[in-house]
Structures are given as C-alpha cells and as structure tokens.
Length: 322
Image 1 (tube, rainbow, N blue to C red):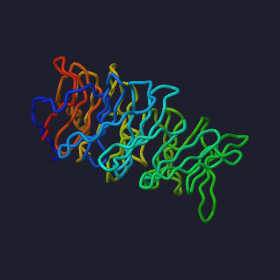
Image 2 (image 1 turned 90 degrees about the vertical axis):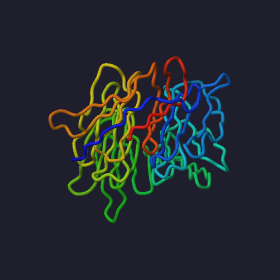
Image 3 (image 1 turned 135 degrees about the horizontal axis):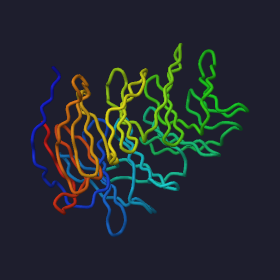
Image 4 (image 1 turned 120 degrees about the vertical axis):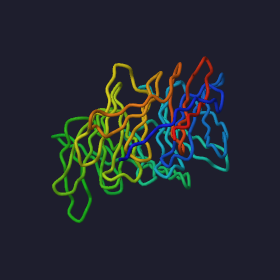
C-alpha cells in the first residue's frame, strides 16, 4: 500500500530567465523566485493562477547565492545571502508588489509567524502583518530570547532558561548557540550548521544533527523535517534520532516533501528524482528529470517547478508528476 506511481512527463518551459531560486511556500501554493539580471537580482512571486507578480530589486546585494525561509503561513519570507558576511532581507507581497527591506546583520528565525533576530547587542522583532520593527537592548549575559525562552551565558557555558510556573534551566553542549526555529513543543538551536533539537518535557528530549536548515512537512505526526548536508539528505522526526535517507559524492541542491509524507524529492546539479521512504527491500528511486543545471525547485499542487537550464535554455520549468 501507499505506493505512488510518478507520471513520466517531459519538462516544459514556463518562464525564461536566469532564476537562481524557486522556493515554494509551506502551503505549496506559490513560489518565491530570485532572478539574476544585468542590474542585479530581482525578487518576484509566481503561481500557476497569477503568473509572475512584481519584480523588486534585492537592494545592495553582492551575491548570486541565496536561501529563502518562508513564514509558516506563507505570507512573508526571509532571504539570506550565502556568504560569511552576507546581507539579510525580509519580504512580503503588498498590494501585488513584493516589499523588500534589508535587516541588521544578525541571526534570524520565524516564531509563531513573527520574525525574531539576535546579534551581540540587540534583539530584533518584525511583525510582517504590520511591518512593525522592534529593537531591544540585550541584558548582560543574554545571547538570545523569545517570549518564554532565554539563552544566557554563564561561567560554565550556555544555559537554556524556560520561563514557566517553575523556571527551569538546561545546560547546552559547548558552542555558539542561537535559536533556529520553534515548532510546536520543540526548540531548535543552531551553531552555524550544527543543530540541536530539544523538548523540555519531562524527561527532556535532545538530539543533534549537522545540516543546512529544516524543511517541515506540514501537519506531520511526529513533526518531521528534511536537512541537507552537502551530499547527504537527513530526515529528522522530532522525538527520534535523525535518519540518513541519501548520500552521494555530488552536492545536493534542494529537497522537498511529497504531500503524503511517504516520499521526498531530491535534486542535485543535473538530476531530479523521487525517493520512497519505505525502506523494505531498499528504497525505491524514480528518475524524474535530467537538466544541464538545476539550481532550485518547488512543488505546487501536482507539479514540480525547476529553476534550471535545459538544452542550453535557462528558465522556470514544469514537470507534472501525478
């Protein structure tokens, strides 16, 4: 049971252009696309129903490598330049035009649809609904803080403080920890590409993983995320030990879930394929497409949309998979 048969379909060009990113929102209704142009990168939104909406410059960008992190409701997003001193922006669709604003250099994450950040001196909070920006001076010893949680330094290391009826403290492994994501009862901390997931219930749960950033399966039970670590794909079901799904010598470009949660889609620079998660008799692999170059892809409905180059033509390509 739970066998998915993927449609054998040819790639068709939807939109020409040198698209660097084509990242679907968590509800898989639209894409945020970043296009490289002679005047610099442009951010736009695209969906099968609306087509391409707006094209706003990403101000003062000095890179052609970006990461897009969507708000869970799919109304706003965070853009990071992928270099050590990379700039950071946030964006939302406003009256049919992408609003793009640069952020102070800091570590940012989404928490209950609010964008929070932390640097050496300040805590930041942005409400995309109102565009309200709040900057708060840090107290001595505070690394990062949310409404109910605090990271603070001590002589012995970093402590996670949970504010509740009875305040509790949890000692963290050595590292430069910041909040990376808050989902349901789970706290994800990260030290660059090193991640620590915690549930402060009794007894507490804690596991660690090395990877880029979580890609959540909406509505999953247990809560599940995919991570990429160079040529590896990891599945992390909260409350369990992370599981290695795939390993190869060539770097992985992007991964995403099928809505069923029983398969994932994986792209390297030249190939896009589906990987079945049921490992009885080995995981089934289905090749879906070959490209000259794949830079990103996103799933909308029953179609995959690829930012890539095929037969020398760069653009946004479509493959119907069901």
